[in-house]
Image: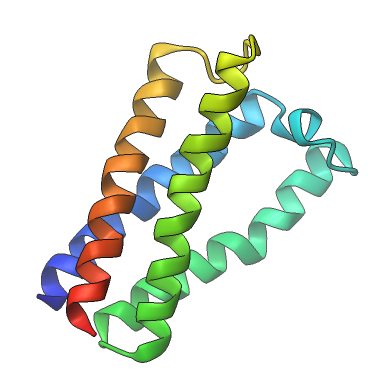
Length: 122
């Protein structure tokens, strides 16, 4: 059961990190009104990506912290899908390409599976 969780976590983490690369292309900091421009956007991603990677290590050793981070990452993926879908439906052109939308749908699917798989390990 944990091997499956580790695998789905790895896939979802990869998709989320690629989405964040896509977010830099689309200048997401402007969409959310974040200060600091590209530099600020990159700086806030250092601890976020470190936490995602740390969570993978903790999931792999079956720790409680790993399960907690796994749930946070899963819900974060659902949030990413939801907020970007909302902006697309409001007419925003950002993230409205086949690649961006495919990433978001894959993140949604993986996040749902990750949440349920995490719950099964408790």
